[in-house]
Length: 227
Image (cartoon, rainbow, N blue to C red; front, side, top):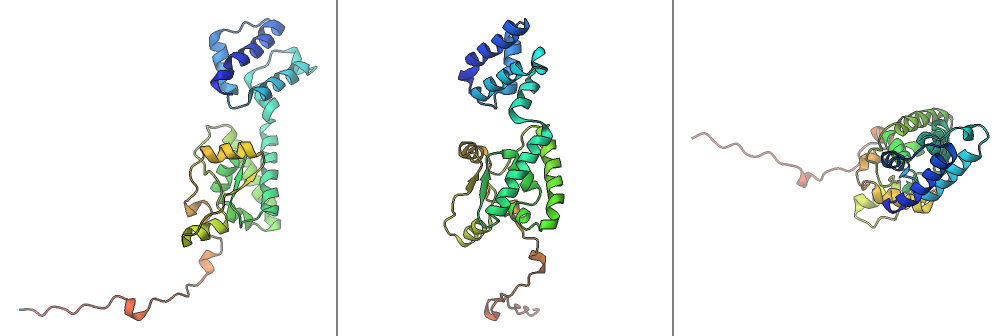
């Protein structure tokens, strides 16, 4: 919610807490609620309040900010499961050739910390359950912390090759909601560092085949004779 939505949000909050639960809404309380829910669009916040009020069990008690966040995002385990499902679907349908940008910045943080998009795409089928567990553990931990800096997108093989060769780079493929993915890219750090998705797991086993011409190799310099 932008700051301009604060008045409309105050009407929703007052109508819920003060009118239905007889809980006064002081300016300090309004500021606290708004700060907690500001990352979400006003329409989603309003729907979450309505869902709380319509719940025959939870609706008997006034909501807390965490209750509204849970109604919007789901539980931590549920969010991690949905995030992994999105990443795995892109892994199978897009692969490591294209660069990608998800609509959730936490997915970028987790995949970058796990070695990058290329490394994840190299995962064998029988290793996916273990990668899923690692992904979910990292994702749940990030839900409890402040959002760190994250790459604007995750580099694929084509982008890394084109950058190293000085060629044009194709825009990353947006995964999920296009508007949210665009905001993730806008607020993220430029993903130019090869470390985000490099080196490949088999780089250590590759052999260098390019030889330096003899004429280009440094030649020993003659020693000056002593006077």
